[in-house]
Image (cartoon, rainbow, N blue to C red; front, side, top):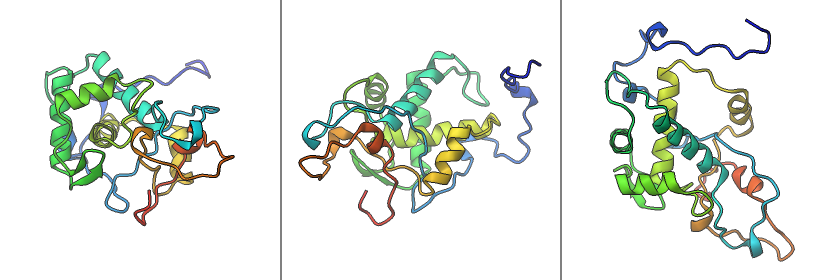
Length: 206
């Protein structure tokens, strides 16, 4: 193999899952402060919050989860242990199963663990510039499903993920500029990069 080539991904049949549950959705995830922490981020520097009001651009971490979920749909791969392909309907169903096996969490939809409906998931997946959905059920349970799939497929954490875990031991804050306010001085202009890098606090003041 050339020194700079990407290692080939393991074939599904080559993965040893002896220590995993029979269903990928039953894979336990570590919680910190009653929440599965999120570390994903897409750095978008030099974008400013005008006058410190909610912006209509999506939050970077929501964009990362959205991109991965859309990629899952585009690959036409099969849902683990089934012959069913990933479709929006199937993804919504799997996210609801993930949510209902989890305890209620606080999101922009309120407090609950119902999981996103198909229309809610579709809205999240279609978002681009506006209303990032970084504090939605689609985002939170979407990151959980993706992490379970990563473990099921025996995929290693990226260097960026390992660095983020060290830098943000409690994970990043779940933010959506459409549903938050930032208090700052008149001469301050927080960037999207700064918002995306807000650490998650465990004192209820996220």
